[in-house]
Image (cartoon, rainbow, N blue to C red; front, side, top):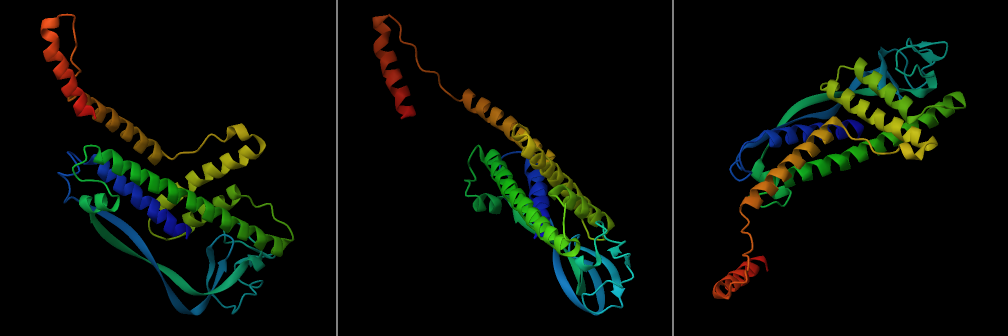
Length: 277
């Protein structure tokens, strides 16, 4: 779930970058194709044993001669702890695996018109670009919150595993994310640089929440570089849109004390008000 969430976040970031760089209106770019690169995960059942750390989500020994989950004698263990996984976890935090994960690069195409229809935005809307960026940013925030919840849930599961193995656990969200970052660094999975970047952002958020437990006033929010960039672009576009609309606004007529001209000007004032109703 966490890896899927990261792929979604990366996809939204890439789409947003393309939309920002588009020249002209969304209507003029209706047929422009946005290419999304995703890595679809699949599993392959194997005929040999693997030692996996359930806490670090890391493959510590492959292939392993030991069949089953009693990995105390596994070659990756020393003095009851693993020397391979990022957390150096006890042997009974490990389990036997019989399958490997493979990742296939898949490129998906979506036109700007498809995107506008998905978000229910009219193609001829002058503020379409701002609206689509706001929708993408909102999607990003929703997925980011879900990933953080998934990380917290995985951390709680890891804490329970450590309590079973050691009788206690001092593992925090920050510690757990550190292990996941190290696990990514040691892996050969595609697109790992982006996942490490995402993990580092979630670590900042975890630190913020940890500090807020002792100082609630410190919980002021946590935005990524991506979110900061998009919000800046939206603000610039809104200001430009307001300026363009302002140039087309007809100022209300001024009624003077000259009674000879006032009848015409009153009619103009009435006509002006009709355009605003």
